[in-house]
Length: 354
Image (cartoon, rainbow, N blue to C red):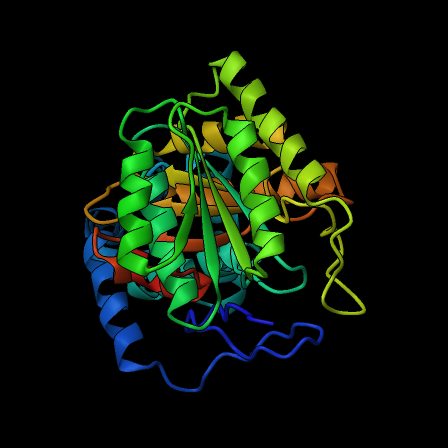
């Protein structure tokens, strides 16, 4: 069964056995290194604002006040900012740190550990097909991200079927069709059709044709559009009905994964800062999300929002210990198909402060 490896974004294996996670490689492949350079460039506005705090010669209260302001300006949020400040101060004291530059390294470590729970591989193949429902507001890059994810999967041997269930936006079906043609995959669509009906047909077709993945594109909507959020819930219920009776491809499937959709992903625009966190909370309340794709991290000054999301995810896990976690599966830094890559906490923290 195909497994997305979070370190390289590659699909590993195709045998019908329990998926495993491949260890991180000892060396960073050249293509990953090029992507990391783009990530660093994209986060430069955030990084330069935070890094300027450490240009002095003393570790004092003024430094911490400047760091607090920089983290808030980067949209880390009040809670995550306070968490990071407290953790940095503790580490500086315990480690006997004496120079501001060393405090910057301490901050990298604090951010890494905060973001680490968001780092998780996307597993494909425990069910045939694996049904992935994708939501997001208009303009977040949802349909484009689906196209990039399709390429990610198809390039490594997974057969993908697309469902054009965004029947509200005039050009959505045409846009997804372009991605289907570009990636040479099949698409299920209906002109003016009901989104839930399209989703049902796609899952049914995916089962009949033995596809590895069914990717369902849903209409972009604001969380305040309650009637459209109810439509999303209907799509989720319909997908579950269409997939009823599907058997896992392994004897033991991952905890919390059963009836489709097996993954419910939300695409958020990294430029929107705390508004992105508000979207995550609203869509999670309606759908119980299983993962995120963060787009448009090229040129943003709000990259700290991932810290806010990480703190929210930690609090969510305490409140709902039986729910699946909400990792960041992919982050995007540009318009090219290769600009969507798997999330790594340390890479992101280092890029944020490079």
